[in-house]
Each structure stands twice: as C-alpha cells, then as structure tokens.
Length: 158
Length: 147
Image (cartoon, rainbow over all chains, first blue to last red; front, side, top):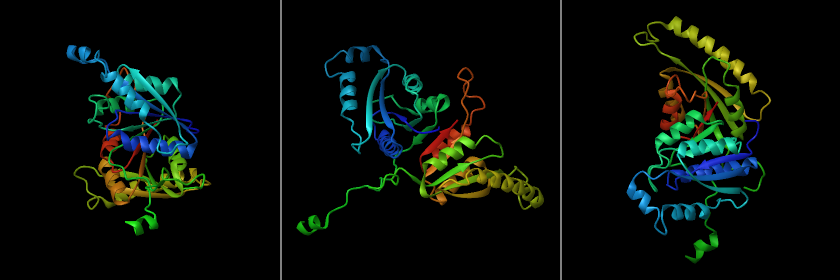
C-alpha cells in the first residue's frame, strides 16, 4: 500500500455496515481517496425468490434505491455507487481487482437488514482472498469526534 | 476539523502484533501511515507459554526468549525511525490471540494491524491464521489485515 487512492466498501445496508462506511469515508477524506460503495445482489435462493424479484418494487429496485440514496457524511468525499449481481464474496473480490482498490473496509457479521449478503462467511472469504489490505470494522464503533455540538443560543432558547 | 491532516479517522494507538520474522514491513508501514501525528504505533510480541512449563518453573528459558524478542523489537522499531509517530514495543506472555485482545482492550488500542498472507484459493482453510480471523472478530476495535 504505497498510498490509498481507492477504497472499496461492500455494504448490506445493515447497521453493521454503517460504522465501516463512516470509517471508509473518513479515511477517504484524510487520504484524498475515492470510495466505491458496492452492493451485491446474490442469486435467488429459491423459486419463490425468483418470482418475488419479478414484482415491481422488488428486491433489486429496492436495493438500487437504497444504494443510490447513500451519501458520504462529508460532502467532499468522491463516492462511486455500484450495484452488482452474483456471489457476494466473488463480486467483492472482482471489483477490488478490477478497480485496483488499495483498501477494503468492511463491516463484519452483518446479519441484519436485507438477508444473506454480508454474513460472516462472505467477510471471511474476502479476508482470505483479498488482493489488498482489508479493514474489518465491528459495530458498534465509537462515533467520530465531529458529532454536532449544541450552540449555546439554542440551549438558551429551549 | 479545519486542518488538512488531522481528523477523526486517524488512530491514536495502532497495535501491530509481530512475531520474530521479517514479514511485518508492510504492516509497520500501514500502521505508521494511519496513526495520527500525535499517535503511537505499539509493537507487541507475545511469547507463548508452553503448556506445563510455567514462567515460574523455567524463568531462565523465558528470560532468554524475552531477550531475543526485545532485540528483534528494537530492530523493528528502527524501521519506523523518522516517521512522525511515536513507537513503543511490548512483550507479553501467554496465548497469542488472547494476549493481543487483552492488550488492545486494556490499553485502549483503536486499530490493530495484522500481518496475514494471501491464501491459495485452491487450498482453503489450511495454514491460514485462524489467529488473524479470531482477532478480527474478537477485537474491540477495527482490525486491518495486511498481506
């Protein structure tokens, strides 16, 4: 890692991904790097899922909507949204290779939210085969020191 | 945070667990890079206490291991000379994973940088540090795995 130019953050939109995303953005700001936020839609696990995904507002539309709504907490960070289909572990590794990522920042044990995406086994596969350093972040992670401070005049008003 | 470099993503205390090999250059570099300007990199070497052979029973044996470890830690510290971070080195006794977690928790470490190596995908599960994995999932802070 000579310098950090591109950071990959795979997300499953769960609470477990949130601290990893915040840290990815802070690191990006510090190092002048770009963040790729990646969500991988795994193949349907059942016939019912195949049917369900054909409905309007289906899984894919919802995932896409959620992904593109994600904004960096700090507006100066260059954020690149990617939606991908396939095996989550393999897709994360493929994007990391293709984009020449310098760092993967990933929450571990994201088992809440949309199902099955970033289970421990995906994180484990990525850890094992990643072409670059990987930062694993467990939730909860302490809030960054930039939490909004209450102005004294607001206190006086209340 | 108006200054260009200081920020909340910089780590105050980056722990680098090391063994007595030469494989840690990359981890040292990453730790120094990610540590805050007023932060520190702490090198930790854990001497495994052998089952049935306590330190009390064989003090000379463990002292010899500790001397060797400290010499190597000094050697690694010199690699970070000239970097804008403080460097400390510690030796602990016990089981590696447990001691790393204990140290990180007690000393308020906010980043652990582990040296791992890329695993042959056709040969999964073998040799690879269940140790790194264990630390990554038990650590109280973010864990960086560096190849």
